[in-house]
Structure formats: structure tokens, C-alpha cells
Length: 396
Ligand SMILES: Cc1ncc(COP(=O)(O)O)c(C=O)c1O
Image (cartoon, rainbow, N blue to C red):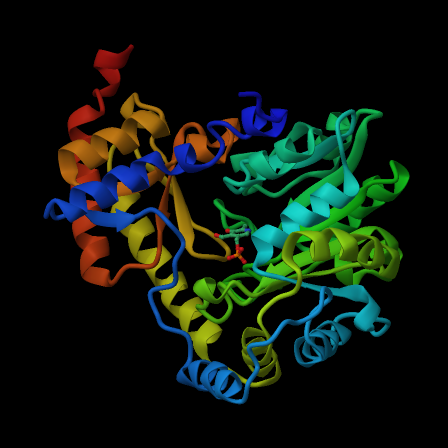
């Protein structure tokens, strides 16, 4: 039988990126003592009040069909949230989606197609490759250099631009590196986007988890308003990934045009999830502040333990749920190191190669485990690194 070419374009871009994680789960199920540092799942539950609100809404009959844009409860809450950042936001600028991932997928589908190109920093979040490939557009990478703290530089962006480029897919705070772009950096990037008439799709799912520096976004710059779309969710901010509640905020025409894409795809979301999300956005919920402090402290713990280890070079994040470690000093790339670490030491980490060529020499460790797991994981990582790292004189 024949299949559409999208299935070829997305082959190897789905579960394959998480192969170490899948194998780790398999080994865990067999009873092996695996320490899992792979995916970015918060290790705290959502606030009890969110569960109570979702339950209340369900019992109040909020389980009927909704509409394509989103329930008024959550649309209004999103207007209030984004008005604190730009005063011209109205309900016309809001579209609800089940998570950042769907919002990203739909937005990209609405902006590019075969013959177009999308610029994205490398390293990049693992699903971006598939999101761009699904549309048929070409992916053009902009190097995010470790010596720049993985911050995108306007000159690197401009050097990568071709006449086919239509969109810059930006991610700040950044996964996997934890880089947080400053307002000044965004202003320079924005100037390039205006010059070349590019859309900016900005994934801000880690907005609430900034440790160092101040969160900034192209959305907050009125000069970039006509070309900026923000995608985000409550997955990370409220430790609620399984609720699948996210959104896209963009120009009114973009939202109107994308509404039919969303309606065709989803036929609306769940009203009780919408009410819970509105509650989460409108109230002071302590979850993000708690995670921010905890993840900052854990990143420091990882860095302190791994810094002295021969062959390893941890790069502490400015935000988020991960720390990346350069393992090239061990003579291995991230992929080889991650597989050996799982097989020989029972520690599961993400190989950098899942996040683009720019991360090939890295592994990514999740900050979502308690201190005793971190200490034991570092002991095992150090053990593999030490026995693999050749002394300088033997390397020469
Ligand atoms: C950068 C980035 N974007 C999007 C997502 C997906 O978020 P959501 O659960 O809102 O779909 C993740 C999840 O890890 C992420 O790290």
C-alpha cells in the first residue's frame, strides 16, 4: 500500500530520539536499579487546588464540547496574563491547544510548506526536527555556540538566512542548554527578522523556571508584535504535563487563519481542563517557585560533582530542568557515552545527538530526581568517565 510522504519525513524523528529512555524503562521493568535522568517530567505533583478545580468543573458538567479557540474562562485568563506583557492583547490573539507541542505543530503548519525554510538554533528541542519536517519545509540551523553560553547571536542568524527562510523558531529559556536570551539579544535578533521579513515562533514553555537573568521575549517588543507567535503551556510552570493544556498567542489574522486548522484537527478542548488552567493562571500557585529553587540547587550539585571528573565538562544552565555535560574529553561522543552509561552503570541520560549536531558531544541530565539519586548518578558517571578517559600523554 502507498503512504503519504509525511510518514517518510517523520520516520526516525519520533520515538527513536528517546531510544535510551525506552531501553532504560525496559531495564527498570526487569527490576534493574536504573537511575533515570532522561525526560523533563517535574518530580512534584500539580498543586492540590488545581486538581480540586478540575474535579469541581467536571462535577459541574464541564465535559461537553467546547469551541476551536478555547473556553472563555481560559481565553480571558490568557488575555490577562499576556496583557501584563503587552497592553494590546485581546481574545483575538489567543488560541488554545492541548500543549505547547500541538500549538507548535499547528503554528508551523500555518506558516510554512514545501519550498520554504525554517531557521532554528542548534542544539534544539528534540521534536523541532519533526515539527519542521512535517510541513515539508527545510530546516536551516543556526549554531548556538558553547563559548557564547549557547545564546543565539544575530550575526550567526543572519549568516544562515536564505531567500526561502520564512520563520525563526526560537526557544527561550532553551532546552536542552538552559540558555536565557536577554532583551538586548532579542532586540538584535528581532532586527534581523524584521529586515528579512521572518516570523518568530517563540517557545516559552520554561518561562517560569529562570534561575539567572531575567526572562525576555520578542512578544514583549511592540515592534515585533506583527510577526511574533508565542507557544507555551502549564506543563512545566504548574507541573501538569499530563493535562495537556497549552496555547498560541499571536497576531489576530494568524489566529483567525489557524482557527480552521485547529478546528479541523481537534474540534475543541476539554472545558474542565480549561477551567483548571484559568484557575492556575489567575492564582498564585507556588509550584514554579519551588521547582525553580530546587532545579537551580540540583544543577549546582551536578556541576560541583562532575566538574573535577577527568573528561567531563558540565555547563550549568540559566533556567529549566536540565544540565548538559560535554563528554568529548572521555574520547566518546554523547551517544556512545549515554549507551555505555546505561549498559555499564545503569544511569539513563539523553544523548546530545537527539538535540541536533551541535549537541553531539554532550549528554543531557534531568534535574528532576532527589539529591541521593544525583549523588549516586554522579558517582556512576564519574566511574565511566574516569576509566574511559586516557591520560593526556597516551592520547598524544
Ligand atoms: C522546549 C519544549 N517545548 C515544548 C515541550 C512540550 O511541552 P508541552 O507539554 O506543553 O506540549 C517541551 C517538553 O519538554 C519542551 O522542552
